[in-house]
Amino acid sequence: MDEVIKLKESFKFKNFTSIFEDHLLYGNIKINIKNAQTGKSKEIYTYATGKGGKNANEILPPWQVKVEKAGGVHMHKYIDGKLIKKIKTIETHILHTGEVVEKVEIQFFIKELNGFFKKKESTLWPKNWSLEKIKQLTKEASENIIFHNNRKYVGKTKEGYQVEFFSEQKGIIENAYLNFDEF
Image (tube, rainbow, N blue to C red):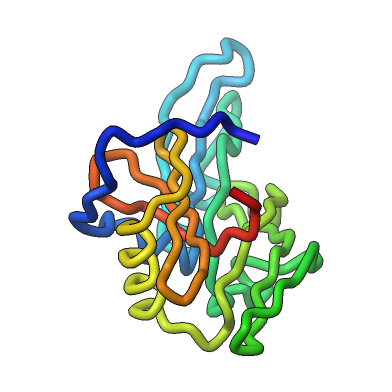
């Protein structure tokens, strides 16, 4: 477990980043185009699944694709097997409302490789929760921080939900999902 750091001041919510919605719905893919012979990078870029990238036939030798990172996707909406597919359910949690939160293993379609790649674990919000409800609960949790380490925060809502979120810039939330760890 990460070392707990006491906050000198509480987290003061300002806003969600412009990529917050993309991260929750589509996830983000970071690509590094490298020269296979020299190992030098030509370009590094990030895009939301299905909203960017290059076609595989645009990347010709000696250039090759390295997937640096694929992450995000915390809502069920686009896990349809076309761009993001669910491999398996790792665990489930039943909320006091009867709604289900799943921790799943997913794969991303990487346009540059013309196929599915990069397995990743992701915690999904309940299926019927809207983006607005998620934002409201995340903002509420940001007002009651129970854990903080570097850019990772966990806060608790009035209903007792623990929301884990990340902030690179003070007060700006980039990503959020429910957390079931003990603090």
